[in-house]
Image 1: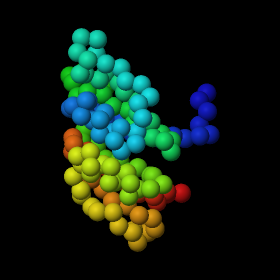
Image 2 (image 1 turned 45 degrees about the vertical axis):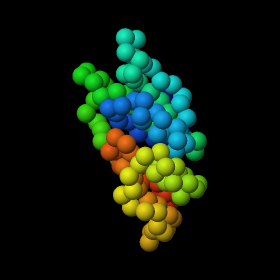
Image 3 (image 1 turned 60 degrees about the horizontal axis):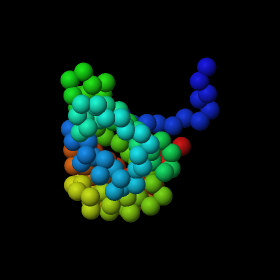
Length: 130
């Protein structure tokens, strides 16, 4: 039986340009845990796992026929960060488009959102739902 005493979410989606996305993910603070590429075409990511410093992370693969996560992009995610303004600024500097500027939220915390270079919607905040 799997130990579920510590639940961690790994958001999963497909990407069109794995090189562009890995550069963007590194710029906002994700770290590569594992990236498996197609043996015949290194630009194709079969499976990748990139970790977030606060826990959890994302898994992704290149959009391709027969891919396990094909058809799942664009996607949306909310990323909790101790300094969401810094992550937001890094995302914009790395090519994201602002959807909502960083603001203090009525329900508590601070947050904002962007579209990454592939059109995935990312919200960054310090509000941790409990």
